[in-house]
Amino acid sequence: MRQLLDSLKVFTDRFTFNQKILMLAIVAAGVLSVGMFGAWLKSEEKTVLFTNLSPEDASLAIAELNKKNVESELTDGGTTILVPEGLVHKLRVDLSAKGIPSSGTVGWGIFDGKQYGMTEFLQNVNYKRALEGELTQTIESIQGIRAARVHLVMPKPSIFKKMQAPATASVVLTLGQSSVLSPNQIRGIQSLVSGSVEGLELPNVAVLDQYGVVLSESYEGEGYGQSEGQLALKKEVDAYLTEKAETMLARVLGPGRSIVRVDATLDFDRLEQQRHSFDPEKTVVRSEERNETSGAQDGNNETSVTNYEINEIVETVVGEVGDVKSMSVAVFVDGRYGEAEGDAPPVYSPLSDEELQQIQRVVTSAVGLSTERGDRIEVVNMQFQAPAEEEAEQGGLGGMGGLPLPGSLPQVIGKVLLFGLALFMALRLKKALGDMMGQQLIPQGVTREEFADTKSDLLDTDESVTSTENKLKEIRDYAGASPQEIADLVQAWVHEAEGATASPRG
Image (tube, rainbow, N blue to C red; front, top):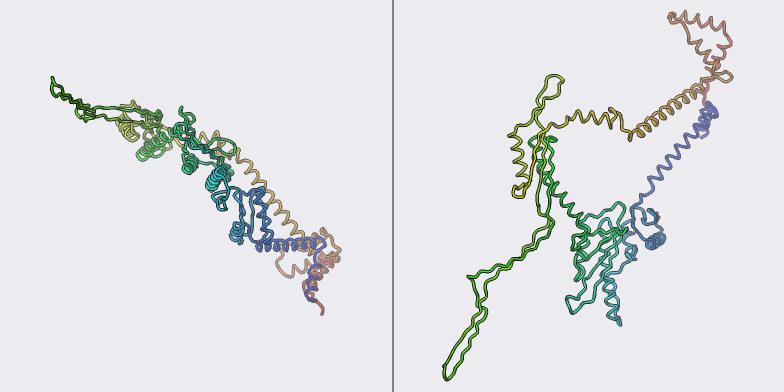
């Protein structure tokens, strides 16, 4: 150990005070980095135990975790609890057994206890609460929904059917961040609630979000609120027919060589007709009446009356909503491009009338145009803009002739500044290391300038002198002219040799 300490002392004596401080800082930074990295490897990664917790459930869960001496962390404003990944499944089972987190709603478990002495009114109230609670728990299990409230209105049954009020329901949803329910999901929630409550029809279920916006469709008799659905259906029909025609033309003419637009007019009127038809040849005896009379003068008389029922056929015809009423199609097609000589652009030639008629007939059959409905189609042959011209326009306007867009300039400037800073730090570090190594060769009592002049004078010999005798003669002449400088140089060499070969005394 003593030899090791002496070697370390000899090694450190070669450096100045500033160099020792720098080396000490580097060693401390290395030890600290290794310690932090080791602590990070030792610490177990945390994962989510519960999320979207109420303040009451969060406090109960934290209290139970503290009893178990489990390290936990609250995030997302106290609604999410993080625990070590290896304990998450066991903790979920243990806390669920203790009713944590509680859903805050009651279900059919409300009838598990004794019901002695409970009136019929309280029984109906508990039934309504249980039904609402079960529906709430089911809706909350749908992805994207954080919380839900269900309100049911179930009127008392009436002996008169016309006086029976319909059942209604309202569902208030609290959606998660960036969560949007599709129309099919909203309609599924309506179907779930209406199918779970006796006498509740789907149009009588209203679905709202946490901001009070009605998400469910309106089913008013005047068609109020159905414009969005009708517009969506029209867009879907137009897009479907357009894709059919464009994909077909792309296989024949090539991609980007045709443009098709379809405008379909849909009939959203609901038509209900009732037809009555009679067949006089087919009759059925409905009733027959016979009367017999007898008298002294007239004798016996018999009369009969027979009523026949004519065969009647009753038909109720209901027209479908969304049927295509009329349609118009516009088609743009590009021509052909022939090879050109040299750097000249390709030679454009339009399509023939026969080819345009063929395209018109094919598109007519593909989208299902009907002349009886008055459908129209227009096929126009026109030269499309060349891709090179489009790139030139985009480069001149938005691309700035190949330069980055204004939106990316801050990123480019930031990268240039970071690169310049890194280069500056590298150059400074290189200079500092050079100075540090150069100071080790300067003997004590000699300035940097004197040592540099001495070294340069000694090494600055004539390149024409190649023999050993000439070199020795030059050195003797210089030593005779400057003996003090030679003495200082020899002392520096001796001091350096002793520092490198010194052995500790034991």
